Image (cartoon, rainbow, N blue to C red; front, side, top):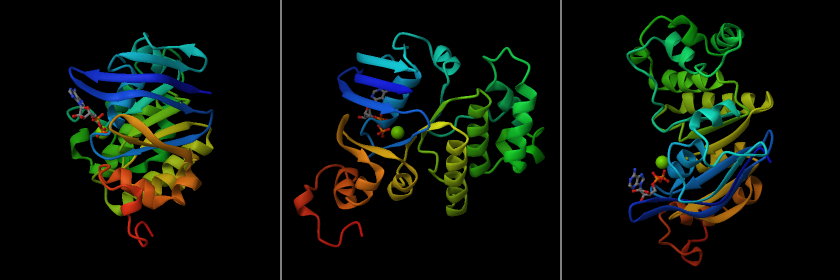
Amino acid sequence: MLLEAKDLSVVYGRTRAVDGVDISVGEGEIVTVLGANGAGKTSLLRALQGAVKPSRGRIVLAGRDVTNGSSAARVAGGMVLVPEGRQIFVSMSVHENLLMGAYLRRDGGIETDIAAIYERFPNLARRRDMKASVLSGGEQQMLAIGRALVARPRLIMLDEPSLGLSPLFVEQLFSLLKDLNRDGIAILLVEQNTSMALELATRGYVFELGDVVLQGPAEELLGNQALVAAYLGGGEAAPTEIPPHAGS
Ligand SMILES: Nc1ncnc2c1ncn2[C@@H]1O[C@H](COP(=O)(O)OP(=O)(O)O)[C@@H](O)[C@H]1O
Ligand SMILES: [Mg+2]
């Protein structure tokens, strides 16, 4: 496995945001994590990235235990996060934002890689010297992903990348993720757009209140959308309460 989290817990004060979950992402896989607001998805990604320290559990990246390592060590190990809300540097230019993605690289290939990113995202190329604040929401998301790519990841984690994007940009985003995966990059995708995420992914996990309540091949979860939807609704509806037409 490329990434393995075992018995991972994240606790903030008295809130147990993630409660002893096992998550894995294989080489070249697309794995999606679904769940209602507050289910613990962002906390999971932040723990995997190293932004919050897990209160319990282990994180193994490409065979190396990184549980107590820095975020930088994980980026160097091939794992990057495109955070919730993109978090690009709005007062910096598009090009400077991309360079930030390379801050850990010491090799000479950075400019070539950035050129490839401009080729992939012509809108970014046209605006390379403009402040990132002038970009549309969709372009900002492309910039956030471009910045992640400059780190040459083997695994990209994305936290609700389609949030706030127009349907056209959402389509573009999902086709980009498919392309990146074809290029050999594994993806861990947190999404609200359940059916699109499950159609893209190989496997999925459904979170509720910090627990994995459902997991399996994406195809199986797609065929069981009523159950998935019940958990996404906040967990009040038991599967038996779902009307027969739900989720179709
Ligand atoms: N920095 C924080 N401090 C305290 N509680 C937090 C913090 N971040 C998240 N939480 C709480 O942890 C739980 C999980 O949140 P989060 O991981 O953001 O879920 P999701 O991304 O699935 O919406 C929620 O109850 C949320 O209120
Ligand atoms: Mg979140």
